[in-house]
Image (cartoon, rainbow, N blue to C red; front, side, top):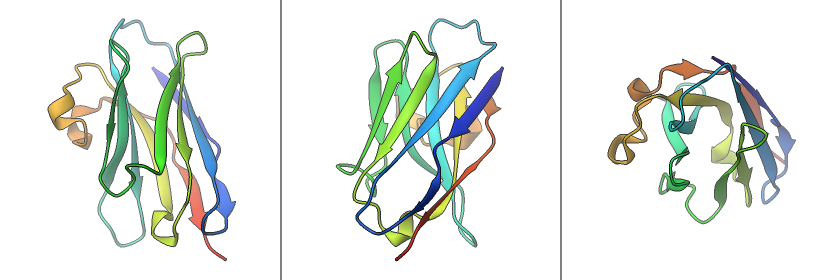
Length: 125
């Protein structure tokens, strides 16, 4: 399994970015794809996740209403649209796949089996 994340960068507060995660080499029909982040000196935290079985979406409270997760099935790509970015959103963002997905623990990084490389998101004026 390979996950290729892209789309990070530097943006001013209030700006937007869209992260992409291409999943390849994976034969499961239904799985979860999650976005996590880690800021310097902080713990790894779940941001959002989507279940490919029914496209159910899950969000952390601190991004709800600002971030939107979506999926392009044909392109095997999951997107994270991030709007109204705040300086506290600055972190390295990772995408990951959970082969046995459970919505009740979507935020638990231990449930994810495969990880992509991180992309830096910096929100600063």
